[in-house]
Structures are given as C-alpha cells and as structure tokens.
Length: 257
Ligand SMILES: Cc1cc2nc3c(=O)[nH]c(=O)nc-3n(C[C@H](O)[C@H](O)[C@H](O)COP(=O)(O)OP(=O)(O)OC[C@H]3O[C@@H](n4cnc5c(N)ncnc54)[C@H](O)[C@@H]3O)c2cc1C
Image (cartoon, rainbow, N blue to C red):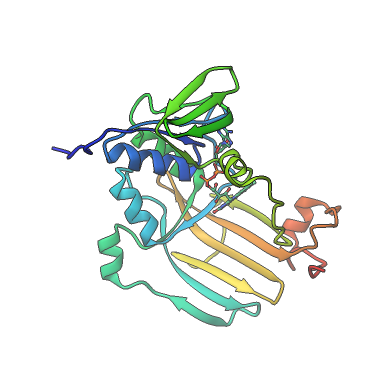
C-alpha cells in the first residue's frame, strides 16, 4: 500500500502544460490532494515537434504515464551543412533498457493524451483561469476569473512563459529575445526518403536544419524543423510556405544585431 505523508496537504497547480501535468501527477503520487487549473477548455499543446531523451521517459514512467511504444527510437547525429558527420550519439543498450527508452521522436499531442490519461479523475479543472494569487501564513488563495476562490496550502506555478505566479512573486520582467525563428512540420507520407531510425541535426553557423523519425499512435512518420538566426526587431515579411519549403532553406539569413 502507498505510504501517505504525515500531513496531507492541499496543493494547487496552475497550468496544464507538460510541466503542470507532471507536477500534479507527482503531488498526487506523494499522497496530497491536488487540483490542476487550466484557463483553456482543453490542455492543448503549443506546437508539435518533440524528441525525448531517456531521463524524461523514465520520469514519465515513474509518474504512472504509459510509455509503451512512445515515439520512434532514433539515433541522433550532428552533421555539418555538407552532410559530414560531426558526432553520433549512440546510447548504451543498458541505459535504454533501464530508462524504458532511448532517444525518441514523437508529436506533442500524444504525450498530452498519455499525461491526461494518467491524471486521476477530478484533478484537472479546465476553463479555470486564475487571475490573482495571494499568500499569507495560513496558505494561498487563488482568485479565479469566474469570481470563485480556491484555497490551498501550496501553489505550484506551471503557468508558462507569462507566468502569473512568477509575476506575483518577482514582478514583471521583460522577455529575453533569442533572435531565432523556427519553421517546422511533420508528415506521414511514406515516399519521404530518409535514413530509418535517425534524428539528424545539421548546422551552418546561423542555421540548423533537422529532421527526425517519429511515431504517433503507432504510425511512423517524420518531423522536421529549420531554426535560424533572425533579428527579432524586424517583422518577417516573406511567404511562410515558400520559405519553409525552399530547397536551400530559409533565406536570406540575417544575423541578430
Ligand atoms: C507556438 C509554439 C510552439 C512550440 N513548439 C515546441 C516544440 O515543437 N517542441 C518543444 O519542445 N517546445 C515547443 N515549444 C515550447 C513549449 O512551449 C515548452 O516546451 C513547453 O510547453 C513548456 O511547458 P510548461 O508546462 O512549462 O508550460 P506551457 O506548456 O506553456 O503550459 C502552461 C499552461 O498554463 C496555462 N496557464 C497560463 N496562465 C494560466 C492562468 N493564469 N490560469 C490557468 N492556466 C494558465 C496555459 O494555458 C498553459 O496550458 C513551443 C512553444 C510555442 C509557443
């Protein structure tokens, strides 16, 4: 039988992204009461592209998430822009066995589905935006957008890039611009010619063009992304589709100022 903590706490997690869902699972597993608040009507992923290394796979398994046949196993290789291999990351078989997986390529929605399946009923409350957080010696009070109040002993802020919890604790801070932009996509088209079971990351000094094998709900495919230096103070005015599908990659490449 699971050992319960000496004092059962009331924990509120804000944000049902991968961080919040994993935090809620872990708090539940530790024997506390947990509620996970999400402002949107669904826990919905931002983007699709995802590769996981063994530690997150092991962590997901320990949290009770089904990791069976999760993603396409890949060997990752770094190459220069002419295709010459720089490094091949081959994982020891024992690590892959012990961690329940090696390096895998997948799409985010499937990971979300598996996390949601692992969450006990009643934990996730969608359409619950938290507008304000207050704390004192007695605990934390969450003010919800619909006027309701939720009290907890502890709050976990997993509320993403514009985190209300972070702003409440430390005030506003400007976002740090990375001066990068990314084009990406995925396909299940069987005519795509790639090397099976590979994730290849190729670089020039300013562009990374990569693809990886993926498996999504038992279906094999590929995802790709092109990451390039881009001056964020300038608006992108090109055609997204033709830029992303250009055989020479997004161009012209502008270095961040
Ligand atoms: C367009 C886009 C594409 C991306 N694509 C990729 C990708 O392909 N691969 C990759 O690895 N990373 C990608 N990322 C980065 C990705 O956002 C992070 O890797 C990851 O989602 C961070 O997880 P998280 O749980 O910390 O936060 P988030 O996923 O941001 O989750 C935060 C959650 O909190 C909720 N929330 C926020 N404020 C409140 C509130 N006040 N009340 C209630 N709920 C609230 C949000 O609705 C959201 O569901 C992408 C990001 C964006 C914006």
